[in-house]
Length: 308
Length: 308
Image (cartoon, rainbow over all chains, first blue to last red; front, side, top):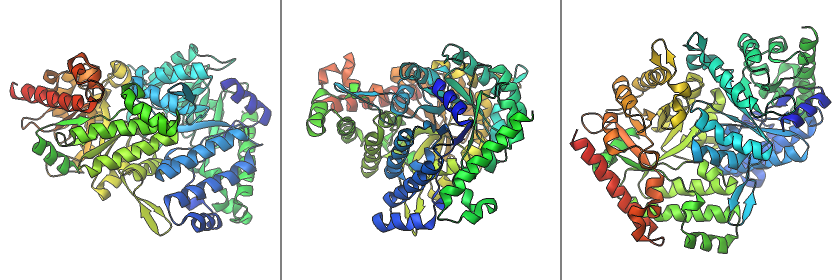
């Protein structure tokens, strides 16, 4: 799957992933009204609204980008109905030819991690049949519990030709509380990065490993260090746009060939119509505003990469 | 909710939580056959089988214990249908008067963490209405991302009178890879424990904080240290039984009053009938085997606490 991701990045010329993190506050009122008319102001109504909202955006941007990253928390907040909308979104994006990175940040140990891995990336056995429950292409995972957490995911990825992005240095202000603490002269995130590189070396695609890392756009200096420390690791970079990361901050995350990283923007794309810059699109054309925001983001990153 | 948990522990004389982590391999064949007869060998059939299995166990043990801990991974592996079975299990356990600790190990940042918190412990707004999507009483969370992860959960707990158990030192063999690394002379898990204690101090129930910690039974010496480091923190202790933890290992996790900790067993209870010790119950009486295993576990822990 990492090879397919890279091919798609090259084809679209866009090392960009759109974060499908729908909050009801982002959904245009005409979509909410329609959903509430059908299902009432219920969890089902909310789930229908975010699904319709997603569908509009995916239809508007799918030809410009290689991948999307739905954030499962935004669906889980609506309970079972939300999870149904998550699954619908995953399926629809795959139908449209997009690679789906499930931003699930799961992590547990042994058979429990294996259950998450099977549920999200693999297939589960029921009697004599097998099923692919959520069927994302990549998943994000949390490394705090160590190899016992990661190994079951790697096993499933190997079998299913899928991939992971493991949290290394996250984009949030307090990520340093534990991640920056110094161990034998180096911050924890470097040790985690080294481990990700080690896991990745044994699980290579054509040019990069299918065991990737998450490093926040808000920490460009750390990105530069981690890029060198994990030479074959593809980096998923959140924190662009709404969280403060800019194109110029991103250049260190990429290799000389312009590969090695994929940058996520969520709010900056999906709620673009709420920004002054795209306000002229209006609520009804929210998806066109998202399309323009994707184009602007691609230009920003391309220019930053060219001018380095 | 921490006060209710403590009252229930005192009433049942059992600082014990049963982990509802159903794997299809644990489910007696007559339950699977019935479920597959109704729904086929489908994800729905699997979900029905684990739900019926859970129900049998809950009916057999609910009067002996204060709480259960369903592991959401074991449900998520069956996709949306599994998540429906998880919700059914949560609701049923609450109907039976049990406290539900959702073992979800979630963690993200800002509005995303808030979405998880709202979905699992709080209420979500849909138009003019509010809903309680999953409605567990406690949730486990992963601290790798720092305060930005934990704070939205604390806010919801404060409002809803619910609680958390934050991963500090996990029970698995490789937990030391990152958690044991030395930072300024002390292992990372102590720094995390200190932070949990700090978060907890501002969020107190009557005698303990509603911001608890997870420390594995397999690390008794670390448990002793963390018990002192986090004097007002309730500790959820996994790793008893199948993972190797014994009653004698547990004494250090408790305070002098016999409170301060609650010990989880999953496989050792729910799949008791598969152990030689309880094999005479047979498959049909699997729930009775679980009841006996709960009684034996309570005795083991009580004796260990009395003889210290």
